[in-house]
Amino acid sequence: MEVFVVVLGALNEGFLQTLKLFVVTLLGALPLGLIISFGSMSRFAPLRWLTRTVIWVIRGTPLMLQLIILYYVPGKVMGYSPWGTGEAGRFLASAIAFIVNYACYFSEIYRGGIQGVPVGQQEAGLVLGMTKRDIFFKVTLLQMVKRIVPPMSNEVITLVKDTSLARIISFQEVIWAGQAFMKTSHGYSGLLWPLFFPGVYYLLFNGVVTLLLGKLEKKLDYFR
Image (cartoon, rainbow, N blue to C red; front, side, top):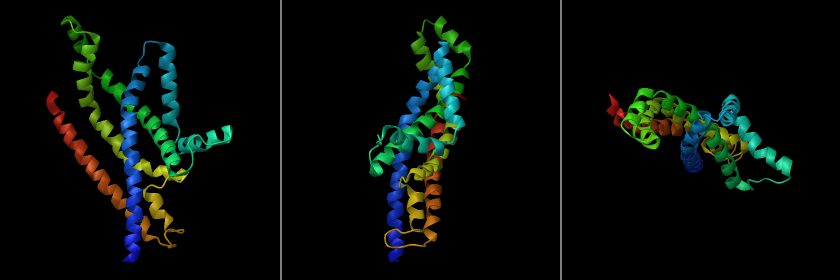
């Protein structure tokens, strides 16, 4: 029982780190993704192609590799790490990597949602005397949100599981906490069973996220 309490405490600390990374990523990637989508749809060709090239690179390379490059390469090039030391530095590097990565995925979902709204509705808005800004926020954006909830839900659920990749730079999330007991942690070593407990955390977390996103989708059902 004493070992179980110690393991549970370590896993809870790791889960809080996982939850923090998840929330920060969503708060940063959702608005940044919308901005990037505007760049990928821009009529200014150089900006459009630059944005699409960045999206292609980010989506075409593993997130784990991006984490390693972002965390280690600046220190090798500059001679010191811009992220600082300790857990705070690892969290900052992880958050930036996750935000940029998921913003690029979200941008394509936004772009598909915006371009999926019939052009005739925008033309009707112009005929009614609405400004382009009003048309976007009162016509296009509302319908876009309804269209993107299902694909966005899939990305959010994937994000929950992808937070485990941050352990590659020794960020102490929930799987890192469970795996630590296989080596040496809190005076214990060679324990295999703590590694299975993070699966329960992820299942419960994903269950809650799925329920919340399902309720959101039902509330946005007003276009049917």
